[in-house]
Length: 343
Image 1 (tube, rainbow, N blue to C red):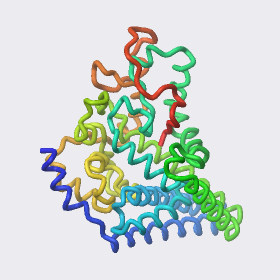
Image 2: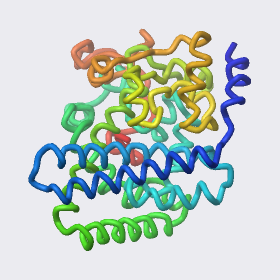
Image 3: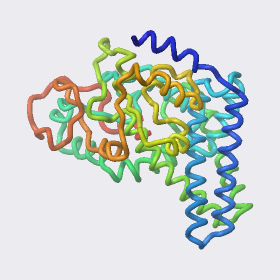
C-alpha cells in the first residue's frame, strides 16, 4: 500500500512555476500591506492588529516557500529555488543553505532515536530520563517547558542560534555571513522608510509567527503515538505516516501555513510542493490513517515529553518515576548537545 501511495503521489510531485510565482507575489504583497497598514495607523488598535496579522501570515508562508525551495520542489529550476530561498532567508531569519542541509538530515533520519542530533526537537527516552542526574533533568524540563517552546526557545533559535547555525562548516561560512547581511539590509530599509513604528510592527509580527510556527513544528511530530525506533529498525514509511501529524484546523489555517498541516505525506514525498500538498492529501486520505489534531490536541501535544520505548508511546513527566531501572542511553547527549533546536 505504501509503495502505491508513493507512486500516486508522483502525479502531485510536479513544480508549477506560474502557480509558485503567483503565491510568492501574493505573499510578498501581504507582507507589504501589513507593514504599511500597521505603520500608517500606528496607535489605532484594529489596523495595527490587522497589519501585524498580515505580516505574521506572510512570514509563515515565506517560511513554507523557503522550505520547499530547500527541497528543490517549489520551482522547476534549481537556481531559481536557490535565489528565492536565499532572499527569503532575510525575512525568515533562516540561512538558506544551512536550513536545506539540516532539514534534509531531519527527513533522512526521521524517527531514528540514535540520530537525535538531526531532529528539530530533542526527545529523551524514559530510560535516559531515569539515568540522568538532577541538573540534567532540570535542564530538560526547562527545555520542554511551555515558556521555552512558545517564547524563549523561538527567540533564541531564530534570532541568535540561526545567526551561526549548526553544520555551518558543511555548507560554507559564506551562508550565514550573506544571510545576516541581507537581514541587516532588510531591517535597515524598513527603519529608513517607515521609522521606528514600522520596525515595531515588523518585530511584533515576526515574534508572533516564530512562536506560532514553533508550536506547529512541535505538534507535527510530538503526539502520543508518534514513531521512534533504534538505528537499523527504522521504517521510512512508518516514520513518515505514523510519526507525523495532520493539523486539521480548516482551510483558513491551510492558507496561513501554506499547507504545513499535511505533514505526513510531505515526509513520504518531499517533492510535492506546498501548493499541491492539500490536494494530494485529499486525493489519498482514504488510503492513510492520519493522526489528525485539532487546536486542542495541538496545544495538548506540549504535555508529551518522554518516549517510552517499552510502551511505544510518548508519556508525560508525571507518568514516570524520577528514579528507576537504568536502561541504555539514547543518542543525542545532553540538552545542549549537537546544536539541538526547538525549530
